[in-house]
Image (cartoon, rainbow, N blue to C red; front, side, top):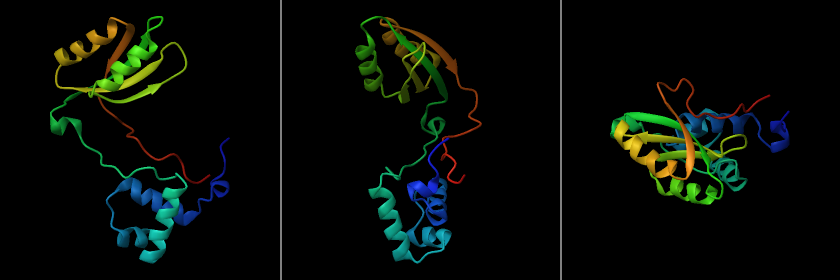
Length: 154
């Protein structure tokens, strides 16, 4: 069981602010203050403290890959051949089509998410990897759960 939010210093107001920011990172300070039930200066101070404590690490934008020409997405499990771990990690980092990648335990060392324009483009990327690793690729049909906040209240 995790650390309760009270131990992390997250009260209901912090939780409301985080939830509002997760819905729209571009929310105005005035709207954020209203969502949290605070004045704008109080909301700004809380926001600053959430950043200082590392609870908020970035404000970002969610771009639809298909809208910018990447209609296909794939999950690739990668198991480097002996002695190739760091080489594979560098290839992944240097391949901009990898929009996300985790180094994991278990049979595979990496699980990456790729965006591509075509199956041919996917093959080209995988060809650079399969010289030094075994891969297992699954095409993404839909994303029923997008990246979201972990539960903030327990």
